[in-house]
Image (cartoon, rainbow, N blue to C red; front, top):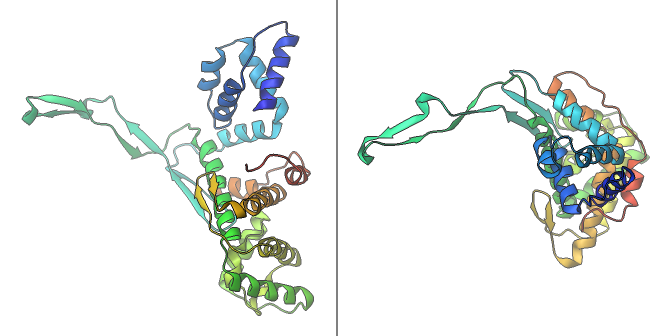
Length: 305
């Protein structure tokens, strides 16, 4: 938000304008724009103004990947389909109905005889497909926010016995590979990994000395990396509300590190391909702008404060 503010003011100054955009304005515009809003930036900067032009120029310059994703999520809308669905790397299924607001019709008017004929307008929602919509933008982002939240809970408030046992099983499989024994649960989580390339510890309670060998070498190594980051510190409770995280002060730095790790691992993973494939109902490969994002995340000053 600060970078967007500074760049906007720089663009306006270079155009000979002395307008000073505040960080609060830039933040409101950028945050809502990335959820698909067109009206909010206009409300803040005016329609067709140099400020509005500078805002979009700054937003695209700072984050072309986010801008492209915004446009691609707009195009992901499935006309007249009654719901959109996709899966997250831990197996959570997001299924969002398309709801139409019914209002402004004669049948909406309710008259109450017992109240001397007083009337009111009744508004309700029906599950109807629509030709156009932009709700996939916010819903996909929120689903990933929720996935981050679940990752944090699993990594912070873990069962020591389950995690230590899984570590022994994984390490033994890495040291002494054998033929795998088929297991439906493991095949399910292995498929999630193959489609998302995100190693999730949700698989740990299902691992045995027999079925672990069906996992790839890379999958095992990535799970061991996550487990080692968990065992650095004893388990602790976390209280979360959407994207707000709280815990005992003694554990905050460990929570912060897990948060950074999750985002860095997501940057290396292929979650967007998994999500778009679910929405379109066919295999989609979503190309990244960069393969260096995870390193920048791990070395960033700001993540969770």
